[in-house]
Length: 163
Image 1 (cartoon, rainbow, N blue to C red):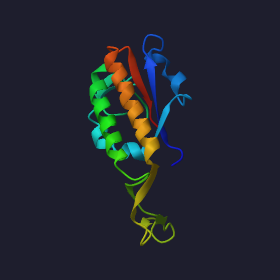
Image 2: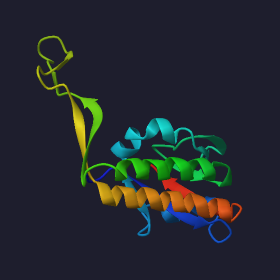
Image 3: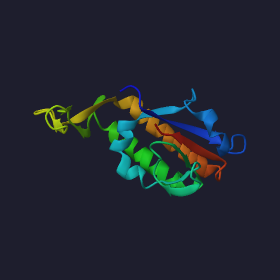
Image 4: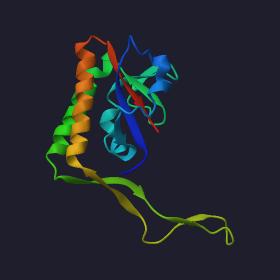
């Protein structure tokens, strides 16, 4: 899967305050996870307490179209969520074939009535094809980032940049 990746980066708060977040967009050290995989895990990611520095408020989950911080108050849940997804995916075959979002092709009949119609026999669920080991490694690294936040009493945070 190419493009549409979310970036995750462990940042030392003292040296890199959140208000310099633009320096971390597409950072070469970022862990990249595809948008569709995060939507696959979305229901459980919504359990993670987090902070949106753009709007200056706390919430749960990730800002899928902006930036998010996972701080000390969300570190324990983040560690569990990411490590348990890693364990689950590790049970699968080397190439994971996951069920993605529902999709269809549409056509616009502007001459007839202007309505968009679904092309017959095109509705289906997308397939997410993923290298198991790469995904497990990324999720384990995110879990280790969360553990580091917790063990450092909040000296670090996970910076997340959505689409």
